Image (tube, rainbow over all chains, first blue to last red; front, side, top):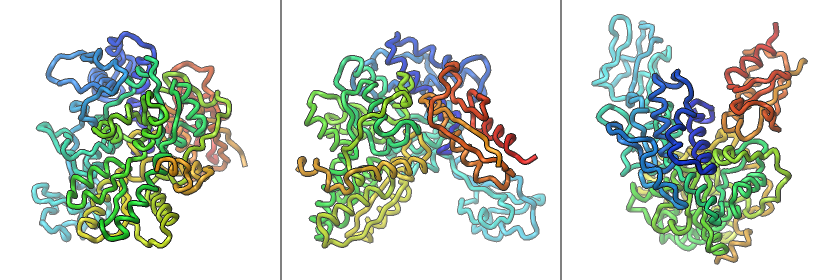
Length: 499
Length: 88
């Protein structure tokens, strides 16, 4: 479903745009009660069984976009309940970040193997033969699976000559690499927040638009409107996200037009991190003192690795993530500024709430949320003159946005700084794969390795808050990499300055 | 070979409403040359804002051989293009 524009995408973006407009136009906040009617106009249901339900769900999405919690379904509460508290120029939302809107959830069946109409009741019926549980039988000339006995091994699926047996899971649970999605008493998806690492893949995968994360756009716009000096740092995955007219230079110019005092590339922090991790690798891992080094830039991955594998938790790099490293550089130059990280990522919102990061990064928004701001303010990239060039980071740092890019940058930095060290790299994308890799590492089978983990399959360009289809985004990032004046992380002059 | 000119609006609002996915769907047709019996070259461009003079809720906008399609979707656009390009 990723990369296809569906009504789910449309609804999500409309909500961001309306909330951005609400903040910019400084309307009375009770206007939020009318927004469900603006987003879902008329009297006929368009997406679900009832227009009232559609509006109620949009109401919940509007609340989450304001940073407010979901309303209890069994109690009367207006959409605007508590809205006056969130009109602040500072971070407002409280965890949980990722929320299932219960009455939007379709309560899809969990992990099921099912015979479809395609079954022809063939003479061979290999489905019965391969089943280790004797769960498949032929009844009235058709294959039937006894769900009580079935262990979902999928053997019958593979062997059916008519592709008549399907295996499927709930899209949210299938996308969740840490198995954090269970069911409530009504069979609807429920997130186990002890397991969830807020990667956001479930919200990008739910075909019923029942999962959403909280947003900080309203508070961010309020800060700009209150005259705070707000500086944007943009994650390397931004290239191409805003359409063919939005060159990286024009995106930076557009951000200045939105009222940001200045704009930085987060790839700068990536350069610093790559060099720091290269030193660490040479001093600790190459000497055998530490088993391996796992990258730290993806917060979902690093949290998952540390919680599920406590024995090797200290092998996860403690270098600052590019977001934090860049924020610190900015704060050094502009101590009075508020900093907003603009990225593809839901988990960064949670990272910014960590005790050690809170003072560095003030807001986190996604590309999709930023798009809402551009549309609300009528900023057109086509109307801009060619803007000044963006030349802060190296090709290596810019490559962090695509899976494999982080390990490449660090490996190259090790090679540049310590040419004698020879080592191996392993990498994984998607939390399920990351877990497999960490299981190997935990068992001592990755000693001396550099491990790159990315929670989103494809890397940051596949994050939950992106706009561009993943393949295209990877190409755009590569093009921008190729334009870089400096190639390797060690060449970045800031690396020297920040020693 | 005949040519078909297709323009997809590249303004912010159209992109937010799915213009990039429409662009993808048009380009995907080129891979179906055999199945669709395409006999026309599709020239597709997405390099400027073209929805300027239209109403607020027109996005996304696609122009096929000067015919303006408002609130375009991949479904509508692909159907139109295939109709115009198929061998009779």
